[in-house]
Amino acid sequence: MAREATPAVGFRAKNDGVGDPIARSGARRYGAAVTGRRFDAVVFDFSGVVVSSAFSALTSVLGDQLDPDEAMLLLLGPYDEDTDHPWHQVERGEITMAEWVAHVDDVAKERGFTVDWGAMGRSFKELEVHDVVVDRIRSLRAEGYRTALLTNNIKEGSQTWRAMVPVDDLFDVVVDSSSVGMRKPDPAIFRHTLEELGGIEPHRAVFLDDHPGNVAGAVRAGLVAIVVDVPADAIAELDALLGPVP
Image 1 (cartoon, rainbow, N blue to C red):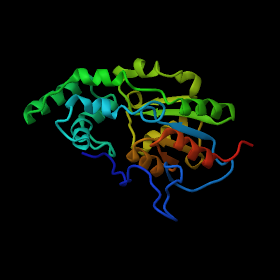
Image 2: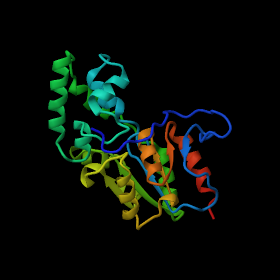
Image 3: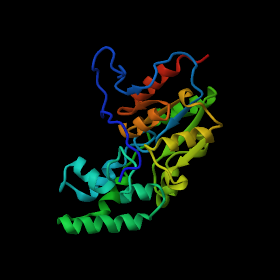
Image 4: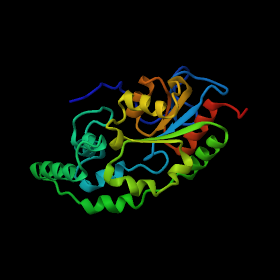
């Protein structure tokens, strides 16, 4: 059951012509086009933005038994919504990872699939840090912008993902869905993040995420947002939004 409907948003960016809110860089931009120093904060997703995406690691447990979209739906539910799917409950900290694993095992048994949990662990070890993003976060702080990390995540993985980058050096605020009981794309978690940043007005914040559903939630909360495909392209689009350093 969906908690709050999210507008449909297309996935990857392309040049669709004049008037379409798609950036030349290959990252899709939503909200008002602005120039100059009109923003106070930049909010980043973790997986798929600061580091490479974990979606393929999660779906690797089913191998090639389903196509990627079907595997995503089975394992993670409709990711552009906030529902009572077990994975969404894990990300809100309502149930444990072990309970989700049991759910997947039951569904797989019922449907005749084999689950290779070792594949997920191996795939997670292959996640890479996007240095172009990390370097830009550092420079944003030096330029006086407030920075936040807003991640849909699980309690059991907190120490592991935090060890991948110097989180406390990069971000003024870290919002983990499993700690606050909310998850993207619920607009409430974006409003919460901006409050944690000191009450930043939504239209003065930019959000970067690799999932269009999460970007749609940010836009509904009033932020300007970028769908990240190629990290370097998304950073170029962010720079175009922010304008020159005063």
